[in-house]
Length: 529
Image (cartoon, rainbow, N blue to C red; front, side):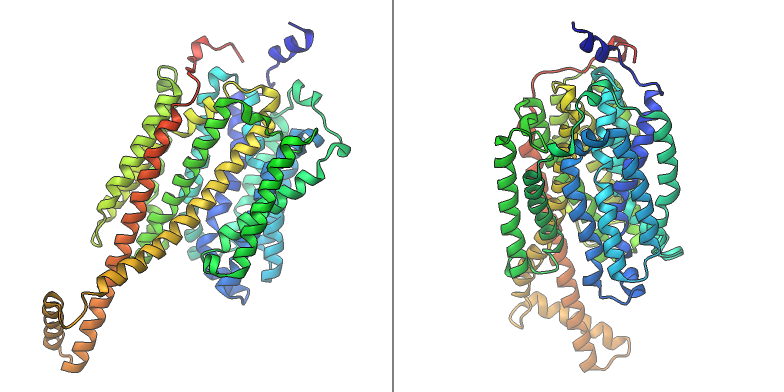
């Protein structure tokens, strides 16, 4: 073994590894939370800055646009200026931009501040993952990733609830200002505990090494893709010329980026990480997981608010029991199951559970109780608890540590893009299937349909008995039937989408078995670190 290799093997962080995992995850949690906490505050933001709701959604679009681009190139930026320095800059500027967003006085200011917030926020998740990979040896990563899992899955779950509570009880500005104490604490803790490992210092890049062509293609492709996904539903998707243009430019940018990055000598992102079989399979799995995670997190509260009459806070609370189950389950999987069972089998079981959970959700009814809805979410979360830690652990198991930076950037980018795709596709399918079911059910609302006539007569008589005139009672009875039809059509649409998600989850099960056979060693077998 060479002196360099021996030095690398002997290196260990000066700070406590678990404190490092907690503080870097604190920063990432803050950023992940910000992707969902703002959504419920948009009507209040629009009213406060005298803008329409549609215009206010650009505060989401601008953030996602900048965030998606930076995610991919964060590994190179870390090599260029030093990973710890870059991480600290991201934490500091994300906190400053949060303050600026909370004090913005116009929509244009808020959109610009959100753009910069996304720009600096994009470096938080990949750097957090890279730091954990370098801080913990492979034998202890499963437990370390348990900390990450709580942030990645818990933050989107509580975001809408926390955002609704802050907005209702204080002001939408606190949705951003709440980041300030967290950011300050994370900044000083990272300064004291985190350091760059020796192999990262040897990879120091220069500004002259910047692959501007690759950067431009990535910015074009991912930027246009995020705009298309975020604005598609409001702009009627591909019937709108703007969305068509975004789709074409996204395809050109992404295709061009892949071709360029695989042929140039010094790419800004090393796609050679995909030559590692476990990383490639893990990337496919995390893409599927991101799609399921974010679509499920959005669909259930949306159903509760729009069709079942729940408040934003109550709809958010639907996700809370599942989040509690997750906090308990993830450490159990990391500590007791992974050391004894191959990760690929654990992942396969996770998708089987998720598929079964969404298949069970196909039995929704308009009069479903809060308790049963919460149980549906818990059922889904149980499956997720078997996925994140095993997949993160096995994905990096055979990858050279010198590639951790680029691998983490691509891994997180795929998860976030998958989340955007999952949300967009799921919401679009709900609309499309609702219209289809309405058209089918409306065929029965005719004078020639005896059950309809019976229900109309019954409702009319009930209203007449309550003191309404015959004419107004008849009109009101028709309105009640139409309202019932709309609700039933929407419930059927959600059950259709849940069925689609179940089928998709079942399809990923054989993919999980493509991982190379590996087994996570127990902590007892791990070297001291």
